[in-house]
Image 1: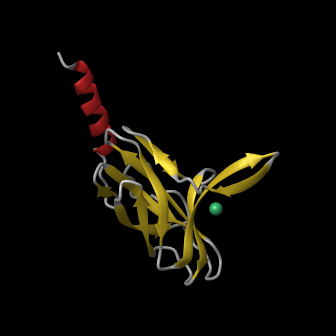
Image 2: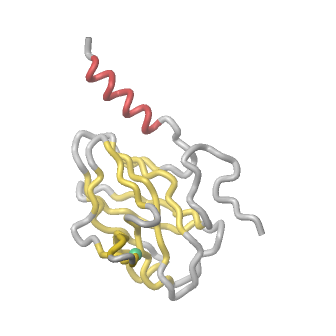
Length: 161
Ligand SMILES: [Cu+2]
């Protein structure tokens, strides 16, 4: 019996089964539900997503680009002495083999420095993710108020006026 292999396959299927619209596949990586928040021109925008790696090797996100921003940095927020701070992740962020890394409020995020245009709700903001294996993933951040639902839900991200 190849139990180990079966379990590995099951894990992969569990990760990839809910392939919703708004997910992007590049090689062994799936970028799930990339999103951003409304922001004014001249301010910094954010980028959140979950990156799943079904490959046998870790992959590192080394940089990101967007035509909407002067530059894009990879940041990590953390609480220090009761104050939320964020640091640039100049060494990149690892997506472990057979694992996933979340970019989410309070943790890793992309920071779109110096927006050239406002980000408004419902808009799609193009961002290209650059990985250390040479892969590039062109994704669109959906601009919304709240994080997308982890499961498929019709009301995900919908804000009432
Ligand atoms: Cu930041």
